[in-house]
Image (cartoon, rainbow, N blue to C red):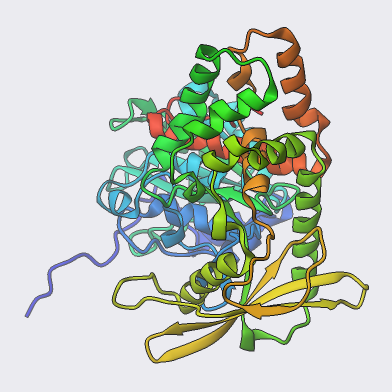
Amino acid sequence: MAMAGLYRRLLPSPPSVDFASSHGKQLFLEAIQNGTMENFYRLVSYFQTQSEPAFCGLASLSMVLNALAIDPGRKWKGPWRWFDESMLDCCESLETVKARGISFGKLVCLAHCAGAKVDAFHASQSSINDFRKYVIKCSTSDDCHVISSYHRAALKQTGTGHFSPIGGYHIGKDMALILDVARFKYPPHWVPLKLLWEGMNYVDESTGQSRGFMLISRPHREPGMLYTLSCKHESWNSIAKFLMDDVPVLLKSEDVKDIHKVLSVIFTSLPSNFEEFIKWVAEIRRREDGDSSLSAEEKTRLTVKEEVLQQVQETMLFKHVSSFLSSSCGRQTVTSGDGDTLPVIAASVCCQGAEILDGKLSSPAAAYCCPETCTKCWKAEDDKSITMVSGIVVNGNTEQGVDVFIPSSGKLCCTCSSKKNISMHPASTDVLTVLILSLPSTTWAGITDEKLMREIHDLVSTENLSTLLQEEVLHLRNQLHILKRCQEGKVDQDLGAPSS
């Protein structure tokens, strides 16, 4: 019986030139000689086919993020951290993308959330000369890549809007190499830059904006080493709105005269589930993945986390938050209880880690539990103290050992218990301090007391923070801006990097 369906499409040539054709090979060799194929090698090493007909944007982005060696900070499958289309669901749900695709602005949002440095441009707000300049810039190096959003009709191809990375450039012919992620449809191909530019000038009917291009590069340091904002919880949009919109209004309407009152206004109004919004970035591993020793990579990340934590606790704002939380008002406002004890936190993290390592999502039918944790401390080769919490995670009839490495700025004795009250990171004081630091500078504009305004500025100004903490805070602040733009549906109108 005949099988309905399509097997590939014939690439319209001209205007395109099949990469594998004799002409395409000649263009490739000439571009290599001219030094404009430097980005090709890393990109082709991670070239992938989109897993769904509408996942061209997600496939292009995951391909570029992996080519730039940006660490996603969470597991893909087994013990491996790796970008995959299924992990790019922050600014738009995968089900929505599967049904309708993703807009240019929301893909830019995803790239920001994934930790990349992004410069994005609508074609209507740029020029072909600027586009050519950026294509040449990325084609002559391997530390940046261009993703183009264009309409296939400009290239006489079937279909409508599409995303794909640009894998090289031919100066003499003014042609770009499209590494088409819809490999089931068209092979990689060379296209005249002028026609590609015309394709980017088509208006996306879903947003009313022209398509465009984005320049993606690696930040000088992995962002979010200790904290990150999460849009996994269903209430993330209301929490983002509270922090960006409601807090400034509350501070303006209240008669705030000192720091204690400012903290009281914010903390007494915090949504009850705000802890689901700001997350601790934990280091986990399956116990059989290694002994108690740390790899050089693990040591580096743990050292950075500890430095960031120490810098948080050295700020004057941390001292004010600690003072407020120790007061009767603070204890009633933010109840940490067992939530700040290391065994309880570690048990939860061990369970989440086991789920990630197994490549599974938790469900009532297959719940993970960690009845006991054991805290261990030892001296590393460099005489540095290391704290690790080990847990036995049970799932039905199976169990596995999971280790969690804890950044600590203090000393801790070795204990094994599921109820021992050990106050350790991440504590409410640390989290709330970082949350206040991450609020935009406009938050405090409504405070009328000039002396208090100066004091607030001295406490929260990023200029007064140590370098690592400054980068951490700016990353969180940028995440907050991005999530707020997503919540307002403004990511396609405003492509600029969030202000600091």
